[in-house]
Image 1 (cartoon, one colour):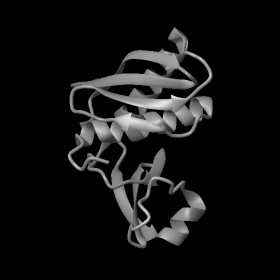
Image 2 (image 1 turned 120 degrees about the vertical axis):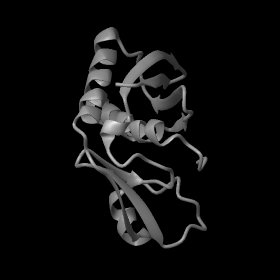
Image 3 (image 1 turned 90 degrees about the horizontal axis):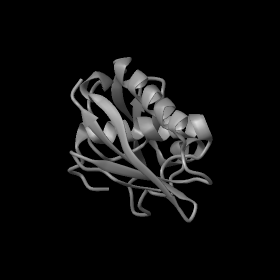
Image 4 (image 1 turned 45 degrees about the horizontal axis):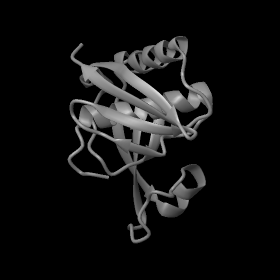
Length: 146
């Protein structure tokens, strides 16, 4: 992961991942490209999202953002983290200390990137486009100031 990810955009990526998994059981994104102006996440998915799905994803993400949840980090051992999280993206040579980023009680996952301290700092989440190709759903999104 690039270390210069925009903290607002990177934090909303976590919220989007949790929202997609809660709504569709698809797990976290399989790849992401996070930039300050526009970003995208790819998910293993069997169908295109319809308009109702898109609005539900946006509404849920924005509800979490609006809840003003704290974003905190905790450290744990790789062994303890392995029992709770998928560590496939953790480099083999990573230390035994794993940083877990928690967004209130909504999401928690291992991460090395920068984040905001509260979801209220994110702004308004908006899906701009989606497409489905070869079982991969790409969601492109941006943030607007509240």
